[in-house]
Amino acid sequence: MKLSLNFVFVSITILSLVLFSCEQEKAVTTKLSLAITDSIRIDYLGLLDFMDIQPKSERILFHDRQRGIILMTDFKGNQLLKMEKGGDQKDSYGGFLYSAAKIKESDHISLVSQNGFFEYDAKGNLISHQAFSEDPPLLAGRAAADTELMEHNGLLFQKGLVAWGKYNKTEDEYYNQFQLLVKFDPENGTAERIINLEENSPFRSTGRAYEISEMNPSLTILDDKLLVIAGTDPYLNFYDINSPHQLLNRKRIDYPNYQIGEGTDRSKADPKALAFDESAGRTYTLKVYKDYLITSFSSGYETADREAYKAIKNREDYSIFQNKIKNKYQPALLLLNHQGETLQSLALPDKFDHRQFLVRNGSLWWLSKFNTDKEEDFVKIYKVEIIEK
Image (cartoon, rainbow, N blue to C red; front, side, top):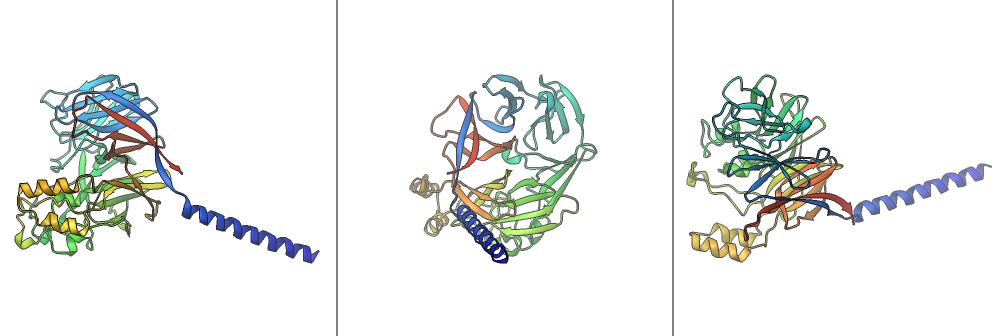
């Protein structure tokens, strides 16, 4: 009997090791890919940004930034509402949206602008308005999916960049006081800027000058944490979502062949006209999708092209260089787990906008890429899943 029990124990141990080995092998060899499972076409002549989508009610919200129109459609592409509230009428939200608007219950639309917090019904009638209790910061807002307004326990979080202030971009103080996000309290009508640049980020540690877009953050919320990536700095920062928003972890992102932004020599920099560094790698968007974190990013130019880019002296040289590298550097996706550990990079289909996608009802919803070669009178929204090959 004792011999039999020992045999059973050894057999179970061996079986467990074999199963564990198989699981480990599967984890290493499993490859993931994007799969389009559905698409929605919306006929519209104009440049539309993707703001929100609600699969349950089959509603999509867009913003025509050129005309100041908020457009709601159904999943068949029918236009249900064209709302123009950017003037000086009594129910106007003003001329500047801080972030993407949201679809709420009964197809109501909520948004934040420089005039406060607004909610409209499905016909565009004003339901409620909460003005700011004091003058809000002059935020560099954008009514698109990469500036998603995120809610947590009644508070709203989004990017909160302010381009100008007391200091200029050649001074240490500019980067020391620079803040990445804004926290809105709709009930009290307040806007509080939060989250400074980290001391060991290149913006504060190199003594170089940086253009504001090189610090443009990507943001998402995971449980009770704010997850933030600051522009060209390839680090995922985890913050407590509760004040004072303590840094919990800072983890390097393993982007392939990544070229961090080098900034500009401050002694040679014009603080009012810093050049945008196209050669630098940067993160555009950060989302939580099931067990993954997804970033869209560019790695930046390889060394030879970066040197050639920095040697450009005039527009003619710039055009020649751009033709030479055309389609060479395409944005891509990186999948991480919830702890920020890299899993796999994915090529981004050319027809996808690399910045504008959302996670709703366990699926990814992607805006089609704007066609710069041919004017089109439609846009598409793609429903996307991440699958094992």
